[in-house]
Image (cartoon, rainbow over all chains, first blue to last red; front, side, top):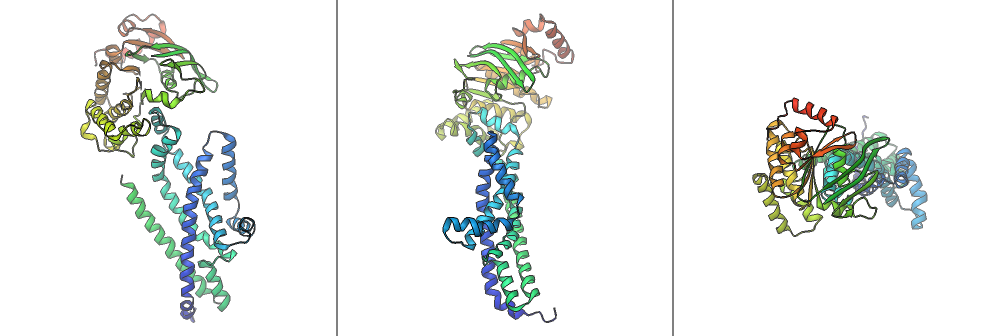
Length: 219
Length: 249
């Protein structure tokens, strides 16, 4: 620790910056795509037809029941090459993180929808609204306030989980930490720096989210 | 006109409605009373198919709403419903609560809907609350808004499911007053209530339900004064001796 080498951190600062930006990009893409997909999956799971509902239950079961790392490897080495002809770390990373997040987010959204009192649905249906109108104007706007806090947690988890895509050579933050360690055999400089950057990301994300939540609370 | 024929409704093995037959004529106010568990609310909820029925038929304006091809949303536009616990939309202002369905379901132009909404708010005496959120209203005010919201769809019949049961006693009167005015204006109404004074004064016909059947029906005064069935006598004896005077309203 005595000979902590700030010079190699400075040398890698550009890579850390690029890696951090990619980490933020991957997490944002993951949570945004995951939310869109998650909404679709949650509504699918709530469908009365139990066969349709079962398909979505299986989807959620698979993505929550297997390690994210395994999913990343399957998508990078299997799914993306068979679709694109060759693989791409960023594309595979975004797909894997989005699909994985969507399973968790779907359960969050489902719980949010089900937490809205049944009387709200009944009142809207009794006014002639269709199921879709009732969801769109009455249920989802109310559910979203309850969904937002856990969705924020999911985003913070995603920032950390995105480090796993370093295994498929996606040049995000963790990738550059490993590269630095490989070049200089310096554990503390590479990994402590990375840990601090992750911490800064998650702390500022949770700060921004809590401010956003307070803003949403005002009707 | 509403015609109910051999209506049956079961939840699993529990039969709630066993065989209900009833005709509600235009402009008639039918008040349904009976002990809890009699099936009063379920009956009302079947009329706009908030509950699926097990067998039988319900006709609204000669359309069989139990038919598989019936567009239930079209039917519900004509049937207003007021709930025990108001069910106002908490994320919308009073005005938005009232205007939403005419705008989105009936797709009426905004200026017409706004005019109508303001008229209704005046009718229920709450014009001053136009831009507040339901959270800041009292129970009685919420229920009056809920009535205005249902009326905004210009229904042909209004269903009231124990509209005053969740209210503090001092607020019951203001809601009943609105309902009385509505009856005077010629609205067809079916009201499930425990307010015997209201039943007596406003009802054209009183229905006593118990055990999933309509046990007895008659003009309110006659049913109160000369109940024929022993179950009706027993029920009226109990509720009227519990301090429910007939002169309340």
